[in-house]
Amino acid sequence: MKQPNRKRKLSMDSKEHQNQDGCLEQSPEEEKPRDGAAPLSHVPSATTQDMWSWDQYLKEQNANAAPIELFSQDQSFPEYENGFQVGMRLEGIDPRHPAVFCVLSVAEVCGYRLRLHFDGYLSCYDFWTNAGSPDLHPIGWCEKTKHELHIPKGYRKDKFVWMNYLKAYKLQNAPKKLFRNRSSNGPVPKEFQVGMKLEAVDRKNPSLVCVATIADIVEDRLLVHFDNWDDSYDYWCGVNSPYIQPVGWCQKNGRTLITPQGYPDPENFSWTEYLNSTQASAVPAKVFKMRLPHGFLPNMKLEVVDKRNPRLIRVATIVDVDDQRIKVHFDGWDHKYDYWTDADSPDIHPIGWCDVTGHPLEAPYRANDVKTIPGQAVCPTPGCRGVGHIRGPRYSGHHSAFGCPYSDMNLKKEVTLHDRLREQTQENLESDSSHLKLENLCSLNFSGKHEQANSQPRLVQQAKCLKIKEKEDFDWDKLFRGQDHSSDEPLKNGKKTTRNRGVITMCQAPAGTISDGTRVRSWAQLHLSG
Image (cartoon, rainbow, N blue to C red; front, side, top):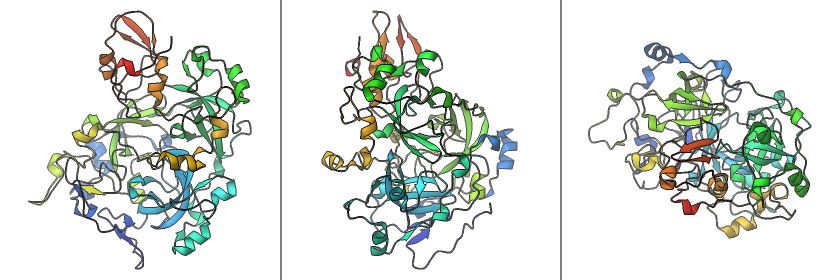
């Protein structure tokens, strides 16, 4: 593809402007910054980034780049330029609720990436994605494919019409030609049908394999839903994903299968009985195909989105790998910022991706490279140049530890997107069923009756997977402080972890904080069966 023009002329009647990185964004309303927040234009930039080059850096480090053939189509260099413009409207998936399709607008364009805004909601719910993401669709797609569209807050579902909405507010829809055609990947095999059962890895807790349902099929992807859990655990994947397996896979491979929440006798779970009680069928085992290993190796260099500050892409190194994931380290930064990500994540890219797509690349941090103007307020965190904010996109900059996504006071906080649906009142959630479209498939109790899916943290409720093998005393507080394992580390020794004088069969490596951000304070919080 041709390199995009980074200095694209702004339309005179547009409310967009260029920030310091040359990205186009909507002009923010004038408001007094709070809590150490600062507009991005006030943030000092790294002085050496314009002179930094991958070729020179690889020679200095005696390092190798991750081969381009290891990257998928969604990760590698795009075939077309990013044609989206600030203010365009479209339909897309809520990343916190993958079963929900929403009215979105383009709030910022940076290289091949977009910051998308939920119409009718605060900007703190905005999120970043690639322009070629399969989660994005043109207006009218939901109506055409019979998917329910979650309309802007304040509108009635029976009164919302796209054309009237665009006309009333003089808005522009994103042209259909901007959305990537995935037909070349081929359709999902007909053996996969909505409502069929399978076993699937919980991507938020990768050591758990759970009872799951195909909740939706769109083009070349499946929506995996975990039975009797809310849709925040759902995810989309291809039919060859290593995260999905046929019914009976856990039993065949000696793995613990996590049964649906509330299942009456999890110790004696039977797929035959469960399929009969839910009046469902299993995906045929013959249609599952083993994907080749991802091929990434430690010490390979690449470019990775910083999940603590997702507007930024940094120079990174792979420091560890497992079957489906890689652990990335941001060069020049402390290892406490390292994290695991899926090998097929759309947030990892080959070296040179930022340069080709016109996206700024954050060069490795070197203390001597940072220069500030005397008297200028700067973030005290080493390496941070004041970009981003712990409260999300509402503030594009900060100059204190309070607002810094990397400060020690914020490091232990779960840095995730704000959940706009969960933060509404329960009354509104119950009256708006758009985020519960899977209830017929996935919220059946075991008598065949409907019940509301529970949204409590999975690991707290699934603590029955811990089975005491010996009647010995354990230091449970020490166990759940995670002194021997980190919640960010894969369990390397299978399902068993030896502690003092007893053996505990684990569903996940013990940790002080589970991935949902819930602190396990004492053994009394956990409810064991048996």
